[in-house]
Length: 293
Image (cartoon, rainbow, N blue to C red):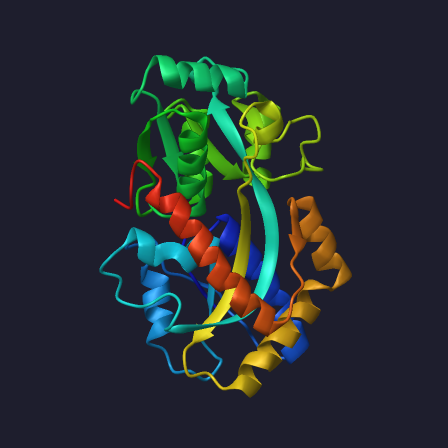
């Protein structure tokens, strides 16, 4: 399984946990390779040109579905060069501010952003990632502008969030499990959860919609793709086995402890879902102030 971010990030952690269960199910090793770089396009480019035999797969976030809106010269077509195999998990992000940002609530961040347009900085795991597009959606709906500071090619999201905690940027969106230690230590302030419901990991933190941006909802999901041309039989076996692996009790409990849950749908429904998500993501991107850098 190929993933487009650095070791230790949310995708890598999920892929590694899934690979372990698939190895047990199949009785053979399943490995995870990190291919970061190219604005998170290196891994999809590799998978798109791999033999369509089911042995090389892409694990990615929902950003894969709308990446063509961000990059006009992609070396692959995210919709036509891949077959959606299975949804993996869903979760929400948490919007956090560094302790040096001088804000304690979402309302204070919005007030600061409007008072100092184009001055605040926000971090992301890279241009076009969910942590980038999610903040762009927030900025647009909150009516503020800010400077995007994407991660360096060698940084994972854990590094990015650590830098926000250290005061290098003012705010960011993060997988909840990655931000939680910094929130507990007081280095980060949790301003709001990006989904429609509060998180069991941070029950005291309101959703962004509750905290002042009415109707805001930016869930994140992870999925598995195969190269175009992979046979229906292989795709359906992969989809069924992945669903079985994610339902194993200890992995299900592990997901819950990381603020995630299994997404259950058939392969056909997932393919339709990916198309709908590509259209939703494109609308967000087209309304954003900054694009992939």
